[in-house]
Image 1 (tube, one colour):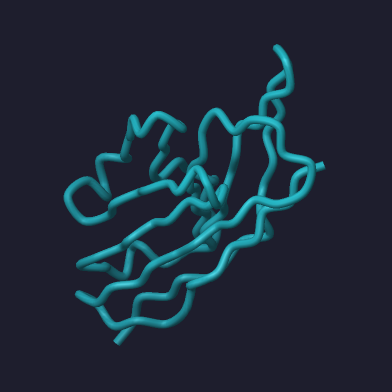
Image 2 (cartoon, rainbow, N blue to C red; image 1 turned 135 degrees about the vertical axis):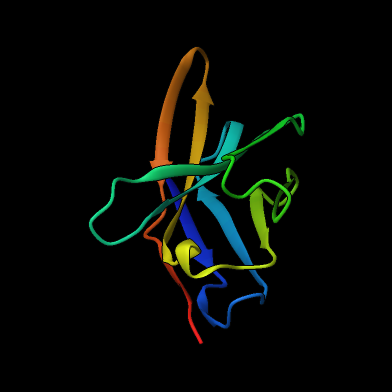
Length: 119
């Protein structure tokens, strides 16, 4: 089993910044990729940013140029630097990992951290 623990959420004014962290622990064999998703009230969960263990990144159009995802493979930790935050970024942010054992891929999820952008 792999556990993911997110941290760094909170309340911030529009235009402000937050940095989310997500640390994976447990019986880790190989992490292929990690990512961040978010879910706003009444909306479906959506992908925000994604990074492979090799550093290849992908972003949702709505956050390009404002958010930066990074990974520390030695610490099995992924970060999301969020700048120029907007009220529409308000959501619960979830960390996800693609864990690999042999040829078996398993997705794990964190419990989520609330991000609220409001004046």
